[in-house]
Image (cartoon, one colour):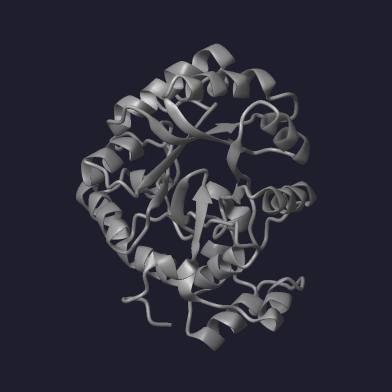
Length: 304
C-alpha cells in the first residue's frame, strides 16, 4: 500500500474527554533504545527526535509516554519535550503512573496513593508542562483501585491533570473508577494474538460508555516489550495472506485489525525507526473486509 501521503487522520478521530485525537497515535516507549526500558542499546538521540517530529508532521496528535520509559542515556519524556515543545494546541500527551524505577533502572515498589503526586510532578517536570492532558493509573493486579484513583481525582480537581484513565484492569475496576471520577480511556494489553476474556469485556464496556480503549502491544502480541513475539518472528499464514492482498506489512494488518475492533479503539504503535513510523501511520488507511477479519481471527499455526 502507498505510505508516503497517508495522514494519521485517515484512521478517524475520537475524543478523550474534550480532547479530539486521531485514532492512530504513537507510543514513546521504544524511543529510548532497541528494546524496552533499560534493556538493549540506548537510541540515537537525533534519530529519536526526528521520529517524534515526523510523527506530528504525519498528523499524529496523541502520544503515549511515561516517566519510567528511559534507558541508560535516554528519557522518552525528555525527548518529547526537546522535539516538540512548545507544544501544538492539538497535541495530546498521555502518561501513566503507578510503576516507577530508580536511576539505575531497577523497579521500585508500586506507588502508594501518597506517592502518586510525586510521580505526576515528575512527568510535569520532564515534559515541561503545568498540567498533564491524560494520566492513566496502571494497576498492579487485582484489588480495589479506589484509594489510588481517588488520589488522582484530587490532583485533577487541583488542576494538575485534565483527564484520567486506567490501565491493566478488569471490568470491575472500570465501574469502581467511574464512581469516583470520569474515565476517558482504558489501556489494556490487547492484540490479534493476545485477546483475553476480561479485556474483551472491557473493550465492550468502553464502547458502550463512550470511553477510548487503547491497546498496548497490539503489534508485538505475545512477544510483549521484548520484541520476541509473532511480529518479530514467524507470522501466521492468515496475516501474511491479508498483507499480500493489500500490499501491506504484517504489522500494518495487525494495526488495521486493532482499529477495526470499534470506533472507540485507539492504536499507539511505537517505534524508533522513521520508516516504520510512516508504515504504522499508513495502517490507519487500511480497510479490512469482514471476510479478512474472520480469516485473521481463525486460529492457525505460524507460517514457517
